[in-house]
Amino acid sequence: MKNINPDTFCPSLWYHMRILPSGKMRFCRWGGISKQDSRDSIKSDLTQENFPEYFQNEMSTLRMDMIQGTHIPECQDCRLMETHGKVSGRERQLLKVGIQRNNFDKTFRSSPFYNEFQKSADNNGHTDLWPQDWQIDLGNQCNSNCIFCTPEYSSKLGAELKKLGLVNYKKPATNWSNDDAAVDQFVDMLAKSKKLAYLHFVGGEPLVIPGFKKILEKLVDRGLNKTVSIGFTTNLTLWDKSIIDLLSQYQEVNLGMSLECFDKINNYLRYPSKIDHVQDTLEKFLLASKNKNWLNSLRITPTLFSVPHLVSIYEYAYSKNIGVESCNFLDEPAHMRMNVLPMDMRKPFADKIQQWIDSKNLPLTDNITINYRDPNLSQKGILEDAQSYVDYIRNAPEETHRLPDTVSYIKKLETLRGNTILDYVSPEYEKLLRSAGY
Image 1 (cartoon, rainbow, N blue to C red):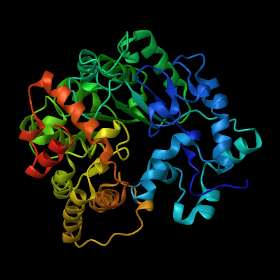
Image 2: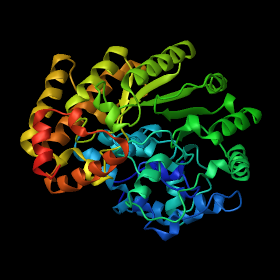
Image 3: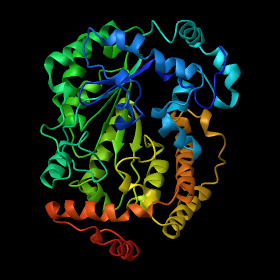
């Protein structure tokens, strides 16, 4: 194989797959929907009949792009993360197959997947493999209206935006996992898969989507709970003991718990949640996890409104020795990005996080070789993640031109919710928002 580019190559295409809320399949959990929808060649529906054809053959062009070092547009989120020193999805996938960016050539050739890469190179990108790792977007059914979310992932937010005339669809987004036949087909595919290793479920909110429990039960019926690790992400507003008991039958569970900060603004960002209730539920999950030896992480989506309070998340996680993860730097909606703030506001926030990092007196090294799922490395991983946000806050291009869109959007939502951002932010924010028309 020639032209393998250590700065673009990702092995994910040989063992990973994603299902969107609609049931359509995609090749990556980190690539955005809007980016991937532009590629007509990767729009298969979830059916047992076309799945092998899709993974093994339809994705062959993408594999050849990877092998030949071509920049794939759908991979731009990972490139942005790597620019700012954040561990990207690509780097996580490299580690899963034993490849290290800082020792790429040697570890690439010693990877257990090397022969499969070579086979694909010799056969125009074709593979005989089946996915071992899945992200399963169950649907958009959700009990929260997070202000930085989209209708594809929150039915409640979608209903609000439709009422306000901000979206224009005749039919709401579908939830493929509410279709019993589709669930049966999916479980059948998993049962036939070779070397199936990991399934991560997201919503919407998995605990309100009936398909989540159905799939877990069917996997137990097939005996896959004894060989497959399970992950899921919850918004910490619900507790369902029956699902906790069901998950305890699996060999390993990775629990992602979503919140933005331990400040009242979390209520505004993750409307209509209440931070006191969220924290109580968080503690219940941590207790259950400790008894069952689950792996835990806090999942964050930093925005222009939560960035002053990021240290509260990092300090909590550091003290509890649990990880902190965000899928990427927020892309959509663009008007909620951190770099919508002017530089003079961003600098003190970055300095605050840097001071917290420095206070821990733990040397930072090359983060691309860290397995953040290893509990022994959680604190180091937290510091590395915090450092990436310092870099992003300080260096991401200023996008203050989006502030009027931010103000227009939140003002419209507030007419339905009866709240105001001014009850949650500092005078400095009020001055900025007023200047943009609030």
